[in-house]
Length: 470
Image (cartoon, rainbow, N blue to C red; front, side, top):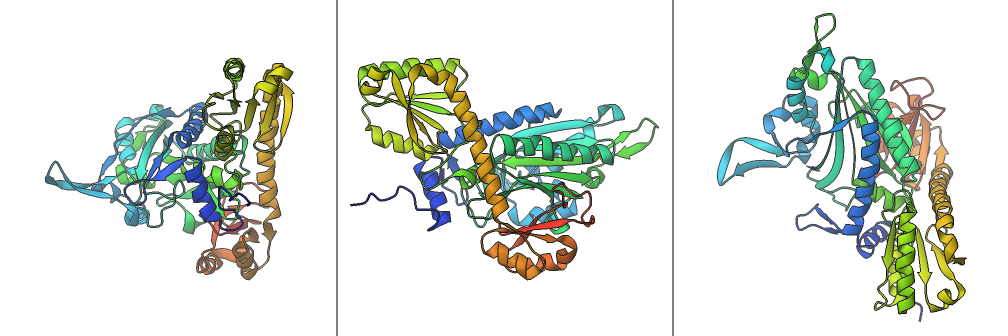
């Protein structure tokens, strides 16, 4: 009798495969309140590595970490009309505390532009105080009507950067720097996802922004996922909160601002970009466990994997030693396959006799015997090869499933068939965008013909990337 697959095959039911993988790989569970999630240790380890890699890049960009309150006075959100209108359906509002009705309701943080601006207006007095570059790692709440673990949850984890600058040009350039050199570098070179960097249409902009820059990734089923955004806020919030400074010329001027963020949605993007019918595949540069060293059976094998684990750790490899010989080896191997650890090193009594170990590679697949004393030198090369393979596969999938089209009907057809379409923006336009929306197809971003980010919505030669999305 054929063994039943551990996961629903992607080709049969991609959403069910996604949920199966999250459960079987022990990444997360649904929380007790609809739309919330419990992130399990292995899943949280992925998020921690994302935090570490992102935090280093954010700090290299000059921003410093801070923390702002979870509760925001409701009146703060009403100061910027477009902002509150954009978030109103998603707000969680607290009306009672300590057994009493509050004098003013408070909103559970959906994003922090308003409360941070209240403090920026106190901290910024002179041009000498600029630029002010702040980031925070926090949780936010947006009441989600159609939740899906990691992708859309009512509470999620993220970082949100907020900056104030003396000029429009400084703010514009900083938002672009975060977009390309922080987010783009991380997603391409660590997550191994070949994201498209583009500009949102006016319809899709962040509420209260004058420009939104986005990073869009193609998932395994051909849908798009917005992986992160960087916003130019202009002076909209500065006007609402009177965030101003005394210029060198002695004039009172409003600051120009940016905000930008990525979230635990990236974990969902990781799963849907790299997972296969056997489970997750984690890019080696991201993996908090790059190599698992497994004892098959026997005390000598246990002693050897512990010794080897220490050697590889000393060589700078992130290693987990699996010496649970009281648990069947096959079950353990399947578990690590599901979790997507890039490399397994398997050692049993026969391997010890030969001075070899079995090297199993999760990303390209396959096994081969290698000398134990060669592993410390061999593994860095193997991990680099596998990192490059995931990025290559991501790029090839996107390129092969993106179609250049000339009409709105062709764009819709390509998206509904499970791919992306590129269409001239002057052909599509806002009216065409609205027509696509009737079929649950959206303009993911605008790009220039050479793949760069347009400096204007209607710059000559601008192309619209059209797709269904998560």
